[in-house]
Each structure stands twice: as C-alpha cells, then as structure tokens.
Length: 331
Image (cartoon, rainbow, N blue to C red; front, side, top):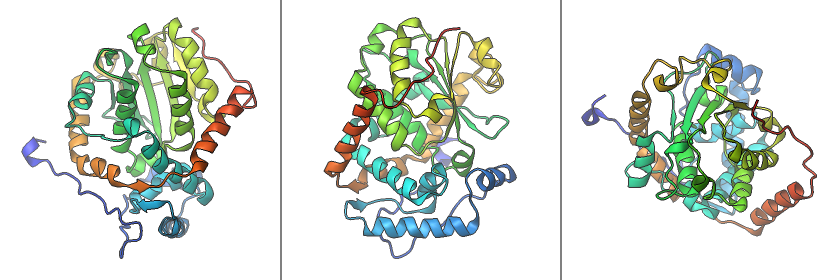
C-alpha cells in the first residue's frame, strides 16, 4: 500500500474511568475460537464480566492515573493469564510500573526515531508475514545486526517492545501466541559486553511477570559457545513453563525440523525475501505510531512494593530456591 494511502490508527483514550468504554474487539476465526474456548477458558459471558471487573479495578486503583481501558488492550492481560483476574491485574500493574522504572527499555517506540528505524531496517527483529500451521505469529531476530558501537541493551529492549506493541492487540496473537526465532551467529564479545547481570535479572523479571506475551516456542540458531554461559544464566531466571519451550539448534537445517522453513526469510531457506518482511513491519509501525506514542502518556505511581517484589525474586534465585533447570547445550 503506498504511503499516501496509509491509514493510521487513532491514539487511544487514556482516561482511567471514561464516560464510555471502547468495547470493540476483533472477531476470532474458527481456530482461535477453539483455542480461546479450550485453553483460555473464554466465552462471551466470562469475557464481558472480566472486562467490567478489570475496568472497575483500574478506576479505583490509587496508583493508576492514566491507562488504556479499551477491550483490545485489556484482553492482552486477561487472555495471557487465562481469565484469572488476580493474575491479570498483577501483570497489568507490573506492565505499567516497568514502563516508569525503565523508560529507556520500554518507551519511545517510534519508527521515526533514527536509531529505532535503523534497527528495523537492519532486520534486528521483525514479525514474519505468514503464520505457522497452528496460527501462531513468528518473530525473527538477527542479533548480529546490533552494532555495540552504536546501540545499547536499551535499544534492543525497545525493539522487542516495538514489535510486541504492534502485535499485542491482535486477537489471533492473544489466542495463538508467538514463536520466536533468533539467529545468534553474529554475536560478538562486544555485544555480550553491553549486558550486565543486573540487566539480565531485571529483564527476566519483567518478561516473567509484566509482558502480556504468550510465547509458545523460542528457538536459538547457531548459538556460539561464548554466549552459552549468559544464555544459561538467563534461563535460570525464567519461569519453568518458558524454560521448557526454549530450543537450541546448531544449523538452519535443525531448525527446519521444528519450524516450517517456508515461513522464515528467503535468505535462511524460506520463500519470502527478508526485505519484504521488514518493509511490511515498517508499514505496521507507521500505522500503529499514534497508539505507540500514546503509551508514553500512561501514568502510574510506583510504590515501594514494586522494588521489594523485584528484590525478593532475585534473592530467591540466588539462594537456589527456584530449583534446578535444563541447561542449553550445543548438540
């Protein structure tokens, strides 16, 4: 679609208790309807009641000052947590809080930002054009495109959030989830030097508790041995469900046994060139730009409980109470 015909989505209402709520939602196809019913415990009654309950909680929450309350946004959290109100409200709280605590990781998701646009055009991270046979959205990353002389771990985190925030409102994504594929062949010591242990701890904590993202599979391809130590440290911080969904592959041929090769970029064995996937993602970022920028206007007052929760989680890991886990190995 030519740029002069681009229709951008309007910025959402951030009034925590609007006079009228936005109840518009996407209609689910037959496959997603079954997923929502069988795995998320969703039906029209539960969905409507849960939206009402979560909106009432937001309106009365003293720390939430400004927040999206539209159905698409709230369903991110309700579907991720399978309609457990307690879990969904806790995740929303942490989502809002982490945007305040680490704005350099979660804010300014702007395709017009020179550095962000540079990473998008380089192909650091982008969703692929076609979904897999199970209706899941596939996200592809090339770690080697992040130049440590130009970019920081903050840029990498913002890129992940940019991709996520353009997809989280999609009903098919909320129901079927994501498959992530990372090419790690280009990782260097300079890149690894950008990440501190505190960064890893904080990012893992937020990934576990604050990101409304249903990760179904996570594939690392061509993982260099120098990255395994950091990868395994990171793995120790993840919840058990996510740990069990991570796979390491020595080659693209190994990946093709798990992920349909036709889906991935042509340069890695697929059928659609990398530049086509990236161009479509850039267009998506422009369409969502007003919504992405509006996220920075949400307002949450962070209390002491946020910091104490994080410290408790880290202490639990360091004393070994999380338990043993399967380490990533190069087969």
